[in-house]
Length: 236
Image 1 (cartoon, helix red, strand yellow):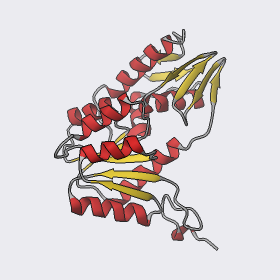
Image 2: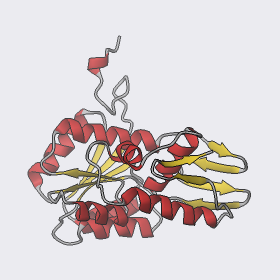
Image 3: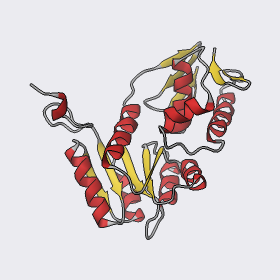
Image 4: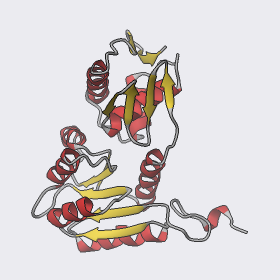
């Protein structure tokens, strides 16, 4: 019989891996630590010591998640993330960085990072964030609002024959609003849902909502997300 304590996040009964993860980190000790802990948690791990090698591996194989260092000796993490997104790869990216300031976080998010973890970090926090990102990626649900269809697993929103692909964070904002129709989410609520207690602050949520509205306008939808002055956003 399998007990709860016998399974760490990512491990299925029988020891079958739930996810294939690429770790791009130039510090050999930290890379080994991350590899060892992820492998012990049941994930299949591939390593890369440089941005160039990581980018080549990410483009050559399908991964469920990329753990990406921001400061790499050749191609930095921002460029790697931007290249992956420009090539149409929607793999979640958990960025590791020693820089915890808001501007660095926002810069990483704009480049395509799905989440941020500031060094030094606790192993349990790393495992928790990896678990959440993979759980979100595996979400099979389909959310509808009239003729509008959101598929979180592919980060696509469809209206008739028209389809657009959403960035990971914008997709999550829309998923939360559609799954909780009639509920007002404040900017703080959305930030906590997206980032936990380590949110980037600033006007990040406002930017996501603004960009999301612009993308929905491409489908001919102008009034899906309603702003409740002084309170937040909702879908009715």
